[in-house]
Length: 308
Image (cartoon, rainbow, N blue to C red; front, side):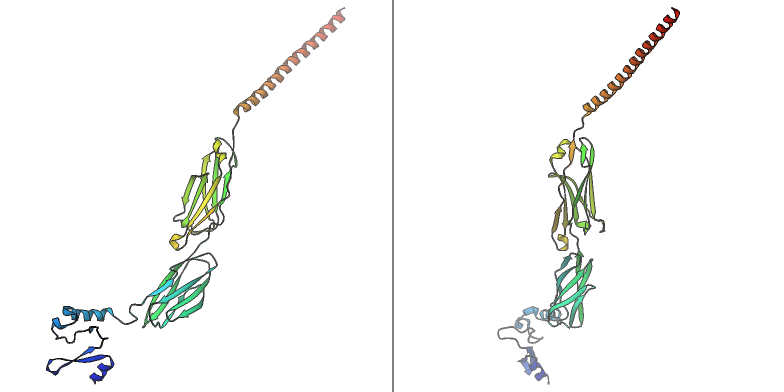
């Protein structure tokens, strides 16, 4: 009974002393048997020498069934998408004969192609950050693989405003840069430039995403040379940590108009006004004096005629 069963499994009989038989797994010609011919075989006769028994035990522990050490993989490993976009996702396993597999997500999904060890899906209408799971069952064991999905809004608009746009030298002005509807904010950097000189640089690390966008302001004093170079604002959205690239956008250049105040002309105007007023005052006094003298002379002449 045991002889036929052993032969079906590929074992062969090896004769030992005292008419005893030991069954050894049959290997291709030239290959050593996996286990010693007999547990009582002298160590120098074993194909593995003194390592025969430990090698056999190691083979038993390191070669488990097909469902013990299988893997589940997803491609891409990170997913970055604009609002409302669609992406392809591949889900695969190292299990030779998986019993079941699929994709778990709240998004709209469609199975495009499939094979014994892989499935290809398309997910659509992605509007917010989420997690997608790929699963396979092999020999009664199930494993999951997760995929983080990030939704981003590129800095399509970069708005720069100078207040006021016309300022006297030595006066103060404000440069304001605003980027509406951009996310993730923690990946955004805004830089205000005057020519090639950076005036202000801000990274919005730790700030929560919102609908207001991002704003940076810079207060400065106007100089005559400020009108020689344009002001601009640069927006950088760094998505490399999420599997993307760096998105860049620049505002329209703005020119600050700086004029020189003229205090001498203002003083001249003041002096002129004061002089005119003083002249009118003196002229009015002289006119009053002349009219008074004329009226007095007329009165004196009238009295002289009456006395005569």
